[in-house]
Image (cartoon, rainbow, N blue to C red; front, side):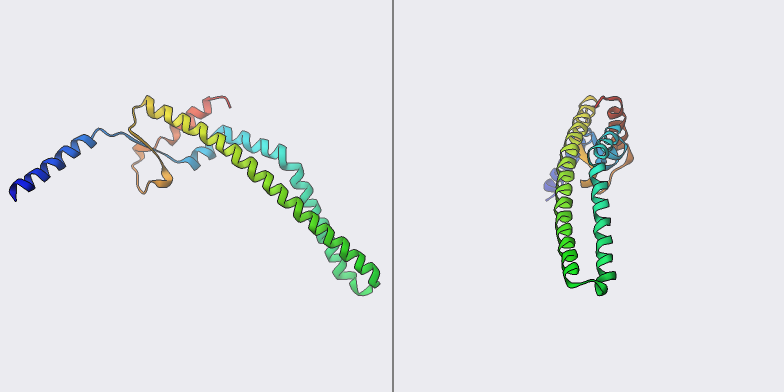
Length: 167
């Protein structure tokens, strides 16, 4: 029994020595995305590409709301044919608005996924470069890390390197 305990303690000691040289880094991807100048450029491209369309949808929504209020307010004084025509017009506008809004959301989501994918690949490439240059054994995302010491966080290094890179 003493031999087994000694062997176990010896293995534990040997395991500690081999893990003592591990160098681990952690990146907070959300913080990198918030701070990187590339993300600001992505936001500006979104505003340029989708801003006018978003404002158009907003105006269309207000027009529909105004038409609904008119229908509710003046329904009692309208003839049946006028009321029916306005109701049909209202339903057609709502249907067109919902379709346009759905297409807009789909376009935004597809574009966002594409842009974020490119940006995240760039971040991973930069982080991997830092990990290789500084001889890290592991590089983890902070989303999957329960606890870390600040010395392991290389988020700011990644942001600095990204800030110096052209898009």
